[in-house]
Length: 219
Ligand code: B16
Ligand code: MG
Image (cartoon, rainbow, N blue to C red; front, side, top):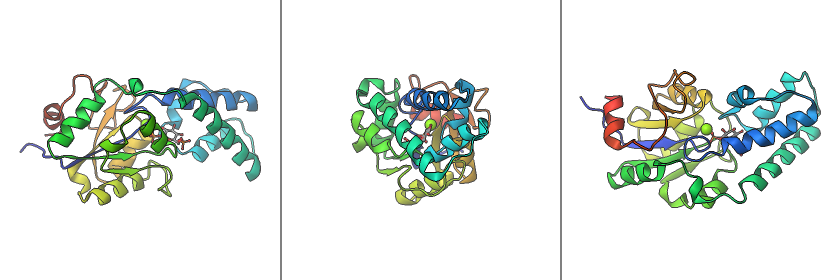
């Protein structure tokens, strides 16, 4: 029987828009200041991980132990740099096809939600002019546990009034795919198939994607 989705939950960074590159720049600058090597492989580990979890990763890699005040100061500094980088973002930075796909879902009565670890998600949605496309927004400001904990997606599904099994999560992070599975969701990886092999299927992007293709892949 064909799968009949009732809702889709989208991760933000790396799925809707390429803010992952701005997070990378911010963390790399901070790691350099701390004398900790930081490359794209490290950045992969941080996708979907909270701000504090990301700092802890860098400190642990460098064998550094810092007091809490210093950690807060470093996170604030990284976030200021991130905010400077995203300040000039425009809707042109949305990934190709993602807005058309969201609009297709909405036109077919399928609910649309955001499930992001980022506390900056509302700002990014505003800059991209897409806040009104979402029936619910769950972000880093409204969760206690970071991906791979399923909290962010479970809150989204609950607010939309749908069962996780009837809801499809789109994720670019291994931790996000695990979060979706942990919550009992269907999950489509967005990005590199080799890296995201825990997902049910992986797409390279939304350019040639549609509701019909999604149903086909998950049925
Ligand atoms: P912020 P997502 C995540 O967003 C990013 O992937 C991750 O790199 C970032 O550290 C995290 O948000 C927290 O972001 O510092 O802006 O609160 O991929 O879950 O949309
Ligand atoms: Mg992401």
